[in-house]
Image (spheres, rainbow, N blue to C red):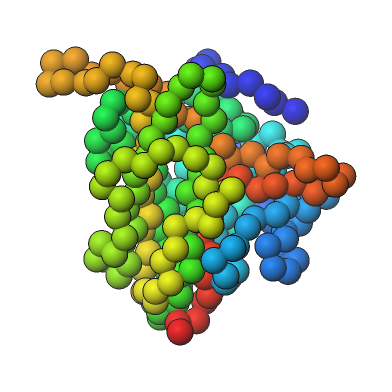
Length: 235
């Protein structure tokens, strides 16, 4: 199993041939794949409609310059990859993290984003948006903000930075609205990085947790990554 972050110039064609592990919805918050049972919290209700992440046993390589496909998508929704803005992309490879670069403070051009809409264009319901948490070393201080667009209009936003915490430990960002299309953006930066100005840009690496992690129960794992909970039908 790969546990390291790579910075080598390996062929993207080679990595593109590594297939994504997929999940099957069992019930509630539980999914199965590759002999694993993975738990994705849905504390705001609904069911996971799309999940981006990596299974614990998977050696799928994650790189911000490559297309990141969902490992689960409810069948009535359009297959759309996770998007990493050009200014946030790095050459770093990992099977555990989605790694981006971000200056201090982050700009609106350094985001990760997921888009969700149904194949037939009809409305659906969003309960919560679960943004990925950040892996950090002792002494590092990360902050984040987000923006959630529903039906092409900004509905929820956090323009003032909030402290970095594990969204998986919380209830996610509550939405509780119908929409025909949802876009969720996340911006994160390291406060320990020197502030950028017009002449000097100072970037730091942001490592979003994307790999499922073991629990005390064998073959059961806590899911990490980016996922949306709701219903395929409007309310």
